[in-house]
Length: 234
Image 1 (cartoon, rainbow, N blue to C red):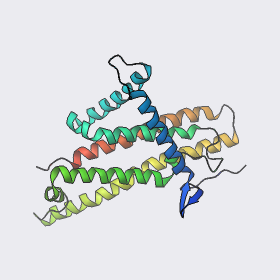
Image 2 (tube, helix red, strand yellow):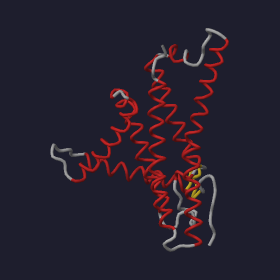
Image 3 (tube, helix red, strand yellow):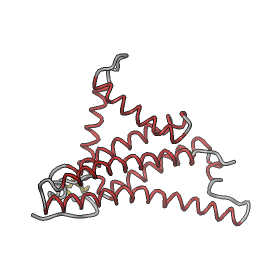
Image 4 (cartoon, rainbow, N blue to C red):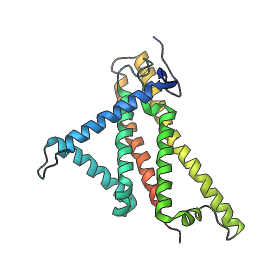
């Protein structure tokens, strides 16, 4: 058997000249499953919730309380929670796909989070969203003053560094998530291939923990970046 390792997903088929990779297809399926699950669980909310409603509400309330503790401002948390909460749940589910048997051995089966295109796309979309909202809340001129400063040469240099920092911050978000999950996928694939029984179990547990932590780190950083980017300078 061949062990397949690549930085990006493998093209499964093409449609209208567009290549659909295994990671893209799996991420779409994962998103659809999550949407259907939440719609079915919360479409008929009751004062006394059933088991499904109670479970999904518990997830949302727990994640909200974590982010609220970071922002220290419930209004800010409510503004960014739809994005940050969705990112956490979506990334976590994609990360947990790493423990699926056969992953990394069959080219058509691969966790989306181990595809650098997937992680960078999430990072770029999230940061663009944050800056668009910041412009709307602060106004274009106030927003630009964060990065264009003419008070002195030193402040101009500081502003330029801030602007450059937004780019490097976006890249680091995507690369951090990709690096951790890609390394985990390689580790699980090699261990499962060489010693397929019992030995991989501790590594599976470790990957579940890492997958949870990385989803939390990514969404938490998005929350923090939103608070700092939309805050007015004094």
